[in-house]
Each structure stands twice: as C-alpha cells, then as structure tokens.
Image 1 (cartoon, rainbow over the protein chains, first blue to last red):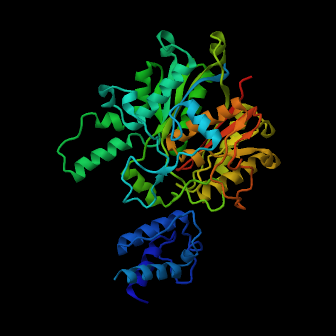
Image 2: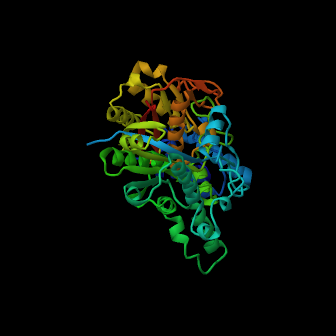
Length: 83
Length: 404
C-alpha cells in the first residue's frame, strides 16, 4: 500500500463512529457508518490534505465512492495526475 | 377567548417579481427565477446558479440616509412589509400600533454586510469598519426595520430556524393573534444570503445543483439558493369584519417539531409530527386537504423523505393530493421561503389554481405523489398545508383555509 492509500485510510478511519475500528479496502462506507454528510466531511478532509478538488454532489449516487477502495483509487488518480 | 385569524394583506419581493401580483403571475405561468448569479463574482464558485431578486434598485424605495442602515435582507423585508401594510388598508397608529406584533424570520441576517466588512478587514487590511455594521447585520435587523418603517409598536422579535424561519415566525404570530395577545401581526420572512462567503459555505455542503432546481423529479441535483421576502398581515376575524376588510384567507393551524436526530439529514418522523400537529391544531381531517405546498428543496434526501412523511400522515388520501414545490422557480429563499410559499398557498386557494413544480423531467420511483409537474392546474382548494423543514431538524407546518 502506498503513502496516499495509507493517508486516505487514516482520514476515513477518523470519520468512523467507533474509535479504533479497523478499515479495509473492501469495506463499504455505508456499512462503516459514514452517512452522506460524513462523506462530505471526509471529502473536505481529503481535499485539504492533498490540496486537490474532488467533484462530489451528495445528491448523486456516485458508485466510485461506495467502498474505501473506491475512495483510495479516486484520490490516487487525482494525486498522481497532479504530479 | 380565542379568535379566528385571517390574512388581509400580503407583500412579496422575489426572484420572479418584486410585488405580490407579479410573483403570482409568474408562479402560475411557470416562469423561473434561476440563473447565473450577477450580484457576486462567480469565477470561484463551482455552482453558479442562484435565484436572485433581479433588477432590485434600493434607491427606488429608500433615501441615502435610510439605505446606510439597511442590509439587502432588511431592504427586502421592509419593501414586502410596506406592500402588505398598504394592501390590508389599515392605519397602524395609536392603540392599533401598540396592539400589532412584528415577527420576521430570517435564516442568517445581514450576510452582505458581514461579507463586505470581512473583505475590508481581512483582505484590504482596513483599520476600521462602518459604525452601523452591527445593527445592519444583526439577525433581528429585518424585524426592527419593519417595525420602524411601518410604525408598529407592539411585540417584535426575529425568529431564526434556517429554512423554516418564516413559517415559525408566521406560526407564532398566528398564536398571538388567536390568543388575543395582539389584534394584528405583520409577519413573514426575509433572507439575502447570496454573498460570496455564504455561497462558498453552501458549496462546501455539496447539496447545491449545478443546473437548476428539480423538486421530486428524477435526476434532481440539489437545491438552488434564492433570496427575497414575503410578509403578511394577520388580524382577528372580528377586527377584519368590523372594517369590512377584504379577507384573503384564514390561518387555522400550526404544527412544529424537532427531529432531535441529525443536523442535516431530514427525518420522516419529525416531518410527520409537524404535519399531524398542524392538522390537529386546525381540527382538520386529512381528507379535508386538497393541496400541500411542499418544502420540496430538490435534494435527493428531502424530496424522498417528505414524500414518505406525506404518505405516512395522509395514508390513501396522499394519492389524491396536489403537491407542488415553488422552489422549482424561486430557488430556496431560506428564511423567506416559508413566507413566499404561504402567500403562494393562499393565492392558490383564492384563485383556485395550483402553481406547478417546474423543471420536472419525470418520476423518481421514491417520489410517487402528484407533484403538478410543469403546468399549473385549476383546482378548488378549501384547505391546504404549507411545509417548511429546516437544517437542524426543525419542522414547521401551517394549515390554511380559503376565505369563506
């Protein structure tokens, strides 16, 4: 796992209702207890951390953000595209 | 002793008209007020559409001395209040002035003043701000300015419950007139939060639409921020009768609830309790209602949840209701929304026409009521509800009847 993935997963872990809960790439955000506004906060934290812009509207069902792995892949794509 | 409470005046400043008459004429024709913002720069905004009060020239309404004290939100409130007061035909002097409440809802108050002053301070390194900065931006400024401009010396305060502010304000005014605490009330809501800083705040919530507002429609993409004001004059029925006033409609019930659940996600149970509260307060059965003026923000969550709440409360009668959202044309005027929508509901009863839900592309399986899509519809309405459900989980519903 690269640094981006580790940092994304650390940010996701901070949004979980239960502290210290383990996060895996296959976990669904909804199953982890991250609701739509939790997802918006998570995206804000990711944008701030990596200084990137993520297109996200909470009124869309965006399948790429269904699992932790989806988020990691999306951020890796944006971050790698930037450099 | 309780009193029947009637509406005898209304005034509107909106994105589709600066008077009640032009507002209604555009509302029934499905003319929308949503377009790219012109009063703020849009280059740094992800979503650029808003429902602005276009071509509003404050100098037509106020002199320079007055304008120095009025944020845009108070300008809207006073212009709408003046129209409502003129419309009702009352002279608010002497004892009546003291027996009239002024209750004006606003979500956020003087955002333009706040934004401009922060820019001066933080960006331009200004050393001082204008001495009227605080009295312009305070959340009770619209209520205070309406009381001063209209000479109303009875109880006056602001009500702040975000998107339900006007409905809570009118509901409290209704309670005060019904109980006999006051004879009349000048009440409603105003908001003017199309300021750059506030819009960036909305952008961060990720709930605004990039194109337009499509309540209850498939492919809806969120809400569109609007602005404006709507003010009504309430008075006891006896008082209106004694002076042979033109009665525009009757307020018969008010229901309120708090979700005590989530700061931003709507809650079916909280909505349903407010709807049931309004019906019970009005002593109306569900089958007495023909029209529901929905909160209908155009977000995925609100419209689906509001649909479920209406079905929970109305049961099989839900399918017979006409339900429409004015926000398809007005955007979400926040603290003004409930006032604009109450006026629209009263006008719909008076004119026997339901304003449509415009920008409707087709049904969403989760929203399966009759939303009066895209075209106004003639309908005799004896009784109706007007819904407002705010961020923070604060819900308010007014029940109204046609003037008999």
